[in-house]
Length: 230
Image (spheres, one colour):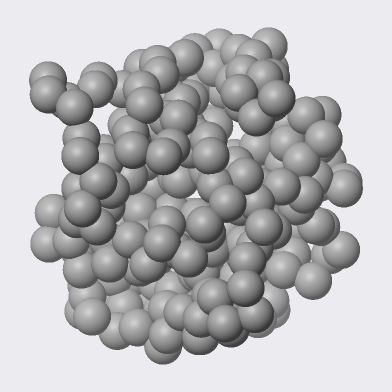
């Protein structure tokens, strides 16, 4: 990444942090910070939109749904401070993409190597369900990240919302999306312009507690990502 693109990525993060385009999401994210669960009382919530996180030179990018109300909305970093993040960063560590297996706070020493984590929507939505309008308000941020992360070769979509958000963003920046449109599934693959797209079930508690997503299934996706880079 050129120094100019690196500065542009940093400026984009600051722009994301200031965003107030979606009144419902602004109200929700701030309300969660004002009245947190007992276990988080007294903590200084981020309560702003969350920018992407990781290696600007990454060849692998991950796209999820949105920050969790008491995860990234609290800690200020994608997939940090909740069970989904515990699952994801442990997997990234096993695959050699992270320097440590845990992710607790935005300044906890976690570093990603050759990987970058982002999301389709940047504010915590009620019931984890952004509206189509809220999604569309946020997509330009993902589009600009894709343009700036010029070394990315493999895109891992965490869940169908991340898959859909990536395809919409790719099309918006002029990349041809095949027809029929590639369908999401765990282990699904598609070539979208310069990116090899991989599907992975989202590491939500609903998926990991029920066994719909296992450690072995998650590891297989990142092993495939490594193989594609090779």
